[in-house]
Image (cartoon, rainbow, N blue to C red):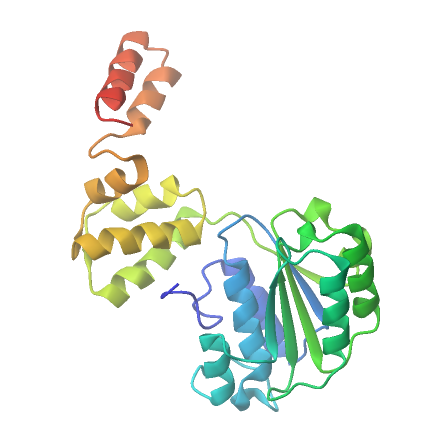
Length: 269
């Protein structure tokens, strides 16, 4: 996505910013990180930031924010870096895939200082693949870094978890969501109606990815972002607020609840 975070400072979860800041301050990384949390929380973006931190040409002696301008950073940003390998475990979940990884990880990096393996949805690996991965994590090459990402920690074997440093991604607060959306608004030089970003933050239930996609769609249609524009994309109708229906149900006002329900049906919700 166009507005993925590119630095630690741009990461939207305050807890994750703090942890990566501590890694940089300590000037030391471990051989494997396990990023856990809900979908759309920024795990893959964080993994890519970390890959640039350890490989940025300006960080050869002391870790810091990636410059995003050197050849190493640019190659990772463009997805052309041969030494940063992203694997979707949902599609490459078998033992043969992990065996191939084990063979390649022994080779020194071709261009970068550190060979980085980002394994997304790692919980999807088969038992045999997990066993093969475990052996690699037990004796990792010094030039390698593993970053495992999962939305379902309970499906990852304890033997794998215990050999990784875990970074927990929590559900984003409304303020954290707003921070992410304002970066998009600023980048697109768009004006926004008061209350629109708060509505979107609640609608996407903590998913930065979903929220930014909806923003992109809304902004492509207008340079002045209105609340009704977001309502139409999210619910398929303009001007309908489900909050009114919920409030009527909580108040046990059957007449008002039926009225609001009928309003939604009429507007195609």
